[in-house]
Image (cartoon, rainbow, N blue to C red; front, side, top):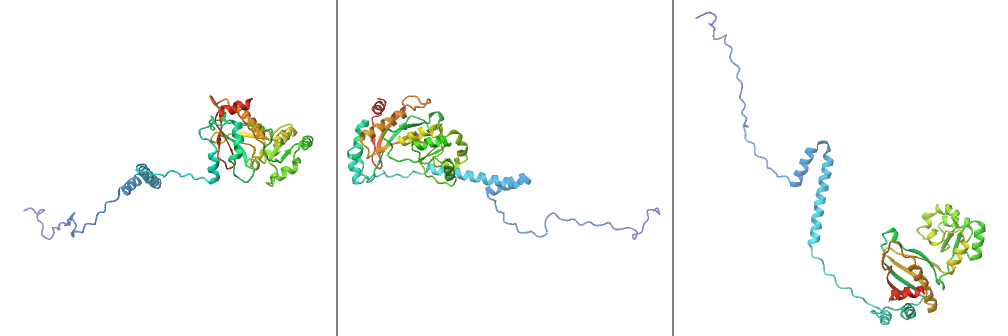
Length: 324
């Protein structure tokens, strides 16, 4: 045997032994209880994992979507739920109301003059009631070209004493004073308005004074006292305006439902005076038909007094009578 191959047993180095680690655990661990997450939590976790830095935003969107779905379910349940049966309304009248309603025929359209003569008989209040016209118009109040706003002078007056204030320069103020203005000192009036003191029912002003009153629009507007050219309270001739309001000038305008309410005087007036006032108001309203209204302008017309039943008028007869 060659010398180079001869090696003693001591010279042979033992090989390193590597311990094989088993992939299986030496001791079997008990399996943890697996809890199935809820559907909404799983959806939220998935969305949050995909969103990364925007996780807060996704959480808010998930909650918003859940709320929206819940509202849909509630709305569907509300639609499918049976509606409760409502009991018919029981109308009860007092003894005086029953007597008054017996005097009015439901199937009859009353002429204007006959209705005015019947009005005192159906009123049972202890104060001087106001006679009122309630007129339904064929207009759409949402359209700007169908709004009704006009003025009328009641020849027999309104039955109410109006306090008229005039804001004008000295020459116009003196003329307004001679015409019956109750207040005519411009500086004193503006000072009272600034302090929110209103000792008048109508405020009339000249165009050159509107600059001073414009600053007080937030105070005058809610009270309905802001002067305007549409109702004749802004004029270059305040003396003539004072005379008109003292005589019985009223403003006629529709409400949000397209109905006009007009006070034509007190029941203490003579029937002829109420008849004259009613004709004047109806004539002014008929001539104020907006250009955007086609066909019949006045649909229905009723006459009543404070706390009394209404009398349905013959619309065509009332309009024809007013124009005579």
